[in-house]
Length: 345
Ligand SMILES: Cc1cc2nc3c(=O)[nH]c(=O)nc-3n(C[C@H](O)[C@H](O)[C@H](O)COP(=O)(O)OP(=O)(O)OC[C@H]3O[C@@H](n4cnc5c(N)ncnc54)[C@H](O)[C@@H]3O)c2cc1C
Image (cartoon, rainbow, N blue to C red):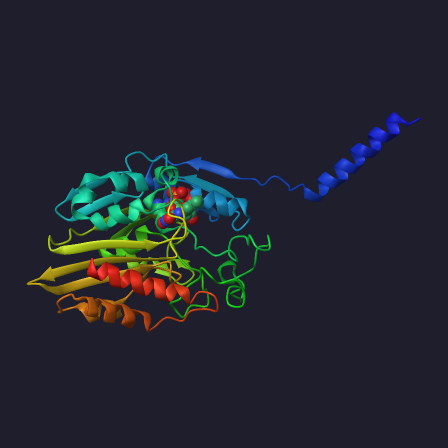
């Protein structure tokens, strides 16, 4: 006869011992709902290990995967009136909490800043566009399975971005990684909004306790992330009104049209005068650890009439500086084609 008491004890003991292997001490997390920008940046200043949470789509994924473990979260979605999209004499102003859907559906943006409408249309899927904010989109993490969690090995890796001394993508699976740049990190930054905003010469307004500064968007990024200090927050984006003769085009290549981030993307703002290119800003996405301005392509087309062969030469020149890894040479051909098409269109 089975001794039921003994059986129960044994089962429970085993279950408890099994559980203890997997039990993770609950982490203490403080959460503040900021009511004003001042309150948000003061909280960031007071709690050095605090992180801003906006839509949470990127941040929560990184926390869940154990890539980051903030002790304090400052929710900025509770700040009223920070999701505005307005136009005045200085140009377009977008509050940091405007969602990608707000941008995609804004008639002001559609009329004069159409590059942003095109880019917003290509971000993820409607459910995600409804949640994610423009501030969060610009500060999103890079797409690199060695930085986050490798679906291949299920392990996370102590890479440059985590303070390590190694980029595991170099010898590893680097099919989606950067093809430009001499940074030690080869991850690709695949925000769609950043190249589009940069091509339109956007500026970023940044608040910290008692201070505000405005910088060109392209200066927001550095090879291993962005230049924001722990007590700083993006509050607004400013975009000068493009001339009526500025042609705007955003092209993106991704594997599944439904949701995937870019394998490569091109944002082009080309201003025409008397049938020739008078100025051009061309910024590539998902090909470097931050948005990559293609000065070679811009200089090739400037002052010229756009023809197919000029677009081809510009695209080829732009690609002359690539340094693809073992598995991502295909991104060079895709980017070259997108660039040629964007200039032609
Ligand atoms: C399935 C899927 C598909 C996706 N596809 C695309 C795509 O095609 N194109 C694309 O561009 N993106 C894509 N993304 C990424 C997505 O756009 C980002 O996760 C999102 O933009 C983050 O916005 P959020 O408001 O949720 O930011 P959060 O997750 O809240 O924050 C992200 C980061 O930004 C910081 N932050 C947020 N707001 C501010 C601020 N105002 N000032 C300073 N720092 C701030 C946070 O501290 C955090 O570090 C995809 C994501 C998923 C899950």
